[in-house]
Amino acid sequence: MATSKTHTGLISHKNGIRRVHLYETSTSWCVSHRRCYSKITGRRSGNSNSLSRLHLDSIIPIEQEKEITE
Image (spheres, rainbow, N blue to C red):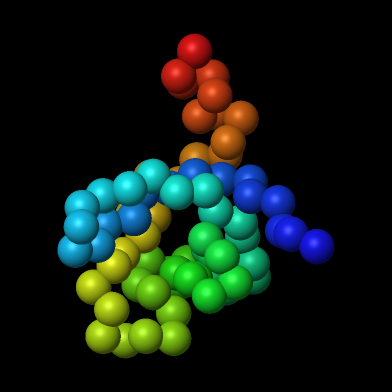
């Protein structure tokens, strides 16, 4: 069963910045079951050498994103 995505946020990595859909766990924001980012630092969990970062100040609920674009 798929986890429903509740928020969106900006991720920066070597190819540029992308807006992705996220779901929340107790300690991280997750894009998929393999790509999770720390809630405290925004760094990718499980891979200390990764250059990708989640911009924590860019996280908004999906409902607010729909209101902003309309």
